Image 1 (cartoon, one colour):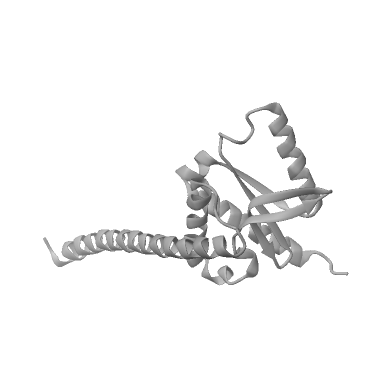
Image 2 (image 1 turned 90 degrees about the vertical axis):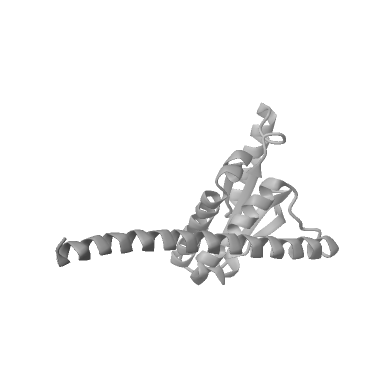
Length: 182
């Protein structure tokens, strides 16, 4: 082998090593953030039971919340905005009806509602579908963007669900800042 062949081989090996190291660092960061999120959730849940009563009510909600909390570290630039704080069990009155959202994201002209629909309790009958559609219409009349995820979606890929909500918040934020004031 001449010197040029050694350099090419070394560059290829170095590239593979960098890729492996990047994957390892990403996985370690993700694991660390999930542990931090779990610790924060435990503290949050304990505190919320004592004060507001706003706690997560299902494993689906916990999976989404952990994915959201972890993703906020990745989206650091936007994470400080009030709209990026997940508010579980947020209560809203719309058209004379009282609703409790699984998660609400509110701030800077943003109103995004996230509903996590476990199969056991949602859309098993035509009446439940009609009720959901009416609820969504009521919320949309107040300017809410409503996003639904099935329990299966959240449990299989909570990060994708968090990404979709992030996109909706960014879209709402952009639209509200472009809207004429007055």
